[in-house]
Length: 231
Length: 231
DNA sequence: ACCTCCAAAATATGATCAAATATTGGGAAG
DNA sequence: CTTCCCAATATTTGATCATATTTTGGAGGT
Image 1 (tube, chains in turn red, blue, orange, green):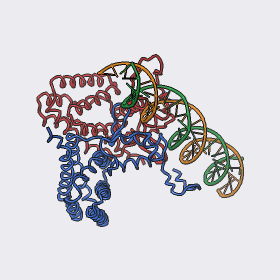
Image 2: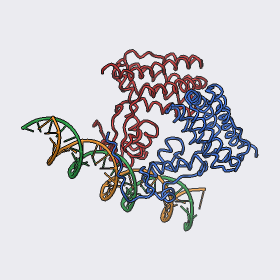
Image 3: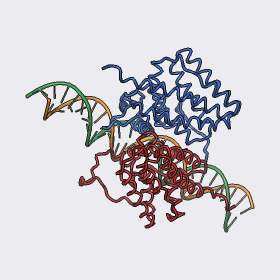
Image 4: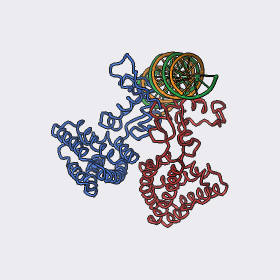
C-alpha cells in the first residue's frame, strides 16, 4: 500500500491553505470511493500516520468523520475497518437510490443549461474511453464525477448530500465487483439521461437514471450473494 | 473472538467503559437534539473542553463527527456553529421525511409485536404528560424517542440512520419553534399511528405518520418564513 | 477609515498510558 | 515423543493529554 509520493511540506508548491485534517479526510475518502481500500480491510490510525506522513490527530479526525458517514465501521473493540456489505445492506441502498437519484435528476432536468449538459457529455465520453482502456480507477472516478454533477445540478444540497453519502458505502465493494466483472458490458444509460436532460424531459431522465441505478446496484448484489456453493 | 470477560478492575465508580470521545459526542448530540444549543450559536472547542471538563482531542473528534452529519456547520474560517436553517433547507427536509418516515413505518407495521406497540403507547403517554406539564425538554425527548423507536422497528438500519440524521439538523430550530408556539396544540397523530400498527395496517400507519411529519415540519417552516413584515 | 498589534482560538505534534491482539513457552494428555 | 491447550508475556494499536505553532478577529492608536 505504499504509494506516498511527495512530501508536501517544503517548497511551497502545492500549498492549499486547507488544514491537514481536511486533506487527510479527502485523501482517505478517495481511497475508499475508488477502491484503494478493500472491504473488510482494517484501518489503523498508526498505519495511516505512517503511510500518509501525518500526525495522529488529523488522521483520527478524518477517521471519525468517515465512520460517522458509514464509510468506515467501528469494529467493536476500538478497531476500525472498511465495512463488508451484506445483501440486506445492498437492498437498502437500492431502495434509497431508486428514490433519491430519480428525484434529483428530475430537478436537474428543470434547471440544466446547454453548457452543463455539454459538460456532462464530456465526462461521459472520458468515461467511455476509460472503459475501452480498461482503466478501472478512471472509470470509477468518471462515473462518480458524472453522478456527482447530476446531484449538484439538482440544487438540493441536503438530498444530494444523502445521495453522495451512499457512494462512500458501496465504493470499496464496487471496485471489487468491477474488478471481477471487468468493465466491458456496462450498459450506458448515461447517454439517454443526457439526452433527456437536453430535452428537459424529467420523466425520461428519471427513467434512464433509474435503470442505471438498478443495473449498477444489482450487479453489486449479485456479486455478494454467492456465499453459497462450497460446503 | 476472545470475548474476554471483565476484569474491569478497580478505581472507578461510574465507569462506563466507553471512550471519552464517544461520551462527549453523545452529550453534544443531546444538547443539539433537545435545544441546549440555539441556531446560529458559535461552538468553540476550548469552550467545550472547559464546560464539559474534557481534553481537547475528544471534543475535537466529537465536533468533527457532528459537522459531518450536518448537526454543526463549518463556518468558513475554522469556526464551527449550530446551523441556521433557511426555508429551502426545511423544504428539503420535508421532502426527505415525507418519503423516509412513511416508508419506515410501513415496514414496522409488518413486523411490530403487541409488546412493542405497548411500549410505543407508553412513550406516547409520557409525551402527553410532558405536554400537559409544559415541560418542553421532556416533550422533545419523548417525541424523539417515539420516532426513533419507529425507525428501529423498521429493521432498515441504513434508512433509519438517514432519517435519524435529519433530526440532528432541525433539533435546535425545533426547540425554538416549540418555545414560541408552546406545546399546547400539538395534534396527535401518534395515537392513530399506534392503532394502525396494532392493526398491521401499513397504509393507515403511513398516512398518520405522514400527517405528523407534515404538521411538524410545516410548523417549523412557518416560524422561519416571517423575515418579511417590517419595511 | 485604515493599519498595527494582541489576545483568543484552532491546528498539529509527540509523549505517555491503557487495552487488545499476537506470540511463545511450558505442561498435560495421547 | 509429539501434539494441543492454556497462560504469561511481548508487541501492536488506540486514547488522551500537555504543549508548541499558526491563524483569526478585534482593539486601539494614528
